[in-house]
Image (cartoon, rainbow, N blue to C red; front, side, top):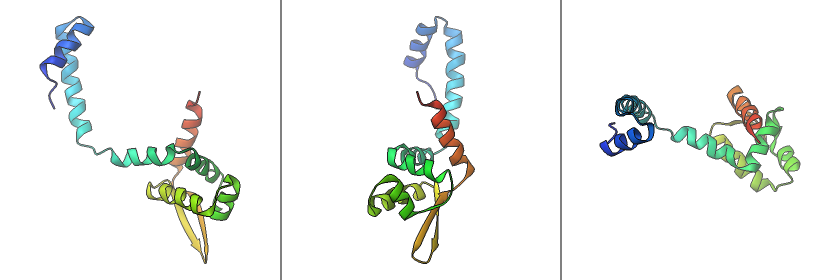
Length: 126
């Protein structure tokens, strides 16, 4: 990917140095080539799934250990259908795993990276 001439001129005006602007645009073009080869949809789906307040509460509950759907719906004071819908989105995004035992469904955090994501989000809140 090449940075167009107009963008180069704009950057040169902002930083006041054409040679430095050319160097920076070459680096930016290289970064964009690297970024453009990766499809970010999977990462976007993870953040979209976790971005809902109810789903984030579910993740925080599950951070403490495996729970059945009935326990999650009781903790959230939400109907079973709403709770199951949110859990389905979290499962599809790869944030939680489901374990079935007869008619019961139990959920847990899928990976320690999810726990770390929850901790980081909590640390960043203002």
